[in-house]
Length: 325
Image (cartoon, rainbow, N blue to C red):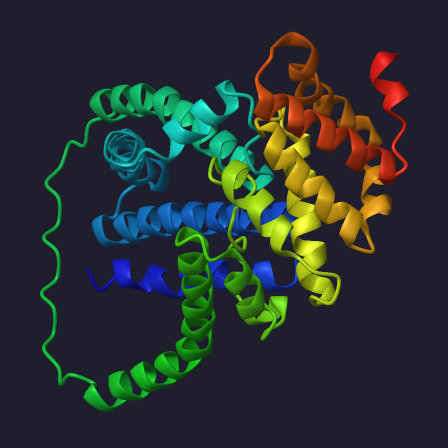
């Protein structure tokens, strides 16, 4: 165990807060790269430890370490699928027409490749360790020497890391407080809460709610957009306009006509509204389905929402004739 603990400092590599200076996708790439480097180095280091302690060929020791490593990968993936539904939710989201976040797609790809690699490598290693048998008795592990507990050093390290963790925990508290306002339907209050801070005052690794890659965004984001005002801080307006772009980038636009009215009325009110329309003209064809109810049924609510949406789009100088092309 003491030798295994020698691998612990390597974990500091993927504790580097890359989210604070890279975008979402590059941060995910960096984290996965660092994790792969640490995992590979840990396996190689443990193989070296076994090789030295038992006087074995390094590749024989590597095979011994590789078998439990592959089993651990399989166990973690399968148990994660059984007890955690994250992967299932991502699959369902994709099947229902929603795009998964770029970093989630990257993680899914990495997990699938690691899983396939473990499935391929495990049988090979099992055959190798069974055919390349050791013909001598293994050396017993040396007894650990007893020593005094370095209480002073541990207390100092604890104090240092607690001090480092405090600012990050404050950021997490702000994120949770804002998320609760969203969940409670207090949309204007949530915007006013954000207005007391800057984006950097919240965790860089978490999307401020509502996450446009989650189902709740179809309900929550239109109502937040409806509460936005031109005098709100520019970073908040930009944040939710970017989230609106993500909603429109999904394969299907699952917003009700009245929700679209709320969002486009906000665009009409905000100074960046017309620029948003120009920048996302290619995605506006998805709005056409919301205008059909007026011609296909006699539902008064749908007809009125389609009429209001048409008027708002005209005031935003959007050419409705593009829907007919």
